[in-house]
Length: 176
Image 1 (cartoon, rainbow, N blue to C red):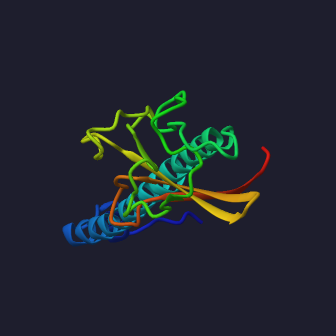
Image 2 (image 1 turned 30 degrees about the horizontal axis):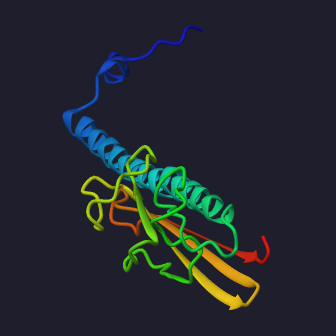
């Protein structure tokens, strides 16, 4: 026996979606897309701040630390605000400075551009186009031991998050 469908059943299955159904599905898709875009924005911000910028601040803090550690324990005149360091006009490993980027001390701070190039100091103040700031502090722990602390930060990060910052601390002993 042959089974046949009625004409009404055929018509209903051939009909398309109603305008209401299309609008509801479009609203659902728009809501999902907006949520995904918000997540993409968070991912971009985190990647830039905690990936790229945090890595650069750590790298530039390490560069400054290496520059300071090659100085002799008693060096009080080398200028490490230049690269390569000069033998006069600076603070060397003289006790002083600050590890707080908000309160830099003259002679214990330098500035880099967006590519990490050292910027010349502008009459003792910060250059207008600085992007990275490095501050350092030398502390005497004993007659033969100094603590060297370097903090690097970035002028601005992406979004409203705290700007990335890296601090390195090491000890320098006499006679090295």
